[in-house]
Amino acid sequence: MPKLTDTQSIILSRAATRPGNLAMPLPEGLHGAAAKKVVSMMIERGWLEEVPADLRKGEPLWRETGDGHGTTLIATEAGLEAIGIEPVVAKATSASRKAKPDPAPTPQSPDAPKPVAIRAGTKQAQIIALLQRPEGASIGEIVEATGWQAHSARGMISGALKKKLGLVVTSAKIDERGRVYRIN
Image (cartoon, rainbow, N blue to C red; front, side, top):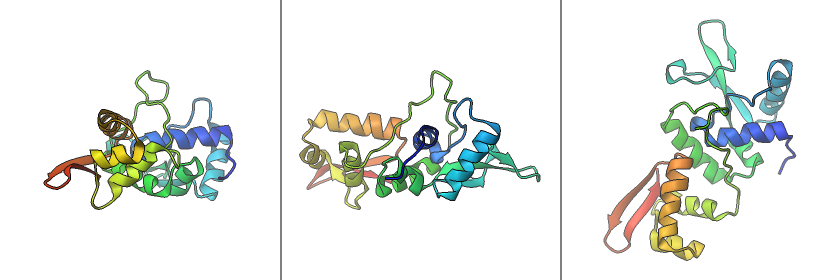
């Protein structure tokens, strides 16, 4: 795992919690030349990417392009891997957040989500991997993989995956397996 500065780690962790993995707004107190230096270094390493900002969706601007448009910053899969989020999980989180483009509250507001990084090898990462399979996973399969109670597995799906991470989790009743959950 690459060595990150505290600032880089904060930027990537916050991006992991935002819709579309938006890296903006940057941490409070990081602006001007210091912000430009940190962001340039992270773009060079492939951790951040500069993309056109959708102002209709309220995406914050990194810089203006001069033609009435601007760009914003998003964390790449490599950036999420740098903070310990597995590539498979990074793809799921990235895809689902792009499908749900509500602007995130600013980090200073009391409603702002706390940075959540999905570390490799955790039970949360295991559950996400199970739900990403084409056949999905039943509560019984999740219980078997994690050793949790059924109500804990359902709570993880509802609370952590749907609400905190913003993943789109669907379920369907299948005769042989019962209720099967999938990440779309």
